[in-house]
Image 1: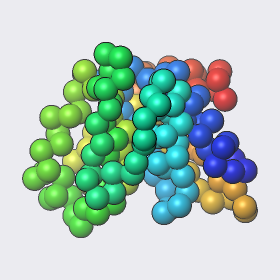
Image 2 (image 1 turned 90 degrees about the vertical axis):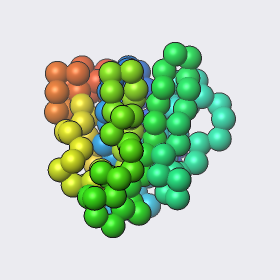
Image 3 (image 1 turned 60 degrees about the vertical axis):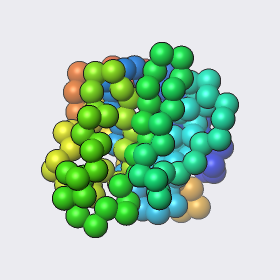
Image 4 (image 1 turned 45 degrees about the horizontal axis):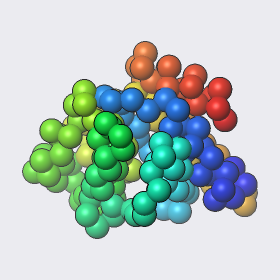
Length: 148
């Protein structure tokens, strides 16, 4: 991905596979574009409002049509016990879509996602690496590849 516009397009392509109950983990160093991918995904779902990073609030909720989508950022978690006391477990259910930046900060307390997106620096641009961890994730990945 050569620039921010390309990173937004990755998110837009991911939007086609979004459905209730799905979980996406976003991994990568600071500045690799995790929030930009989420912004693109939300735009791809038709959301036109402001999309901000939940770095300080830890979660930003979005209601899009009949979809309840939650954008998490666990960067500020010091250890996995903060996940236990956060009350976020209830958000991860069959009726919600959860997009999680810095999932590793919750340790092994988070279940594997349907789809895992790793972003890394590649010269002047970025590289996106996707892995599915469920049958649903495989379908989501196929949907992404057909749109990318």
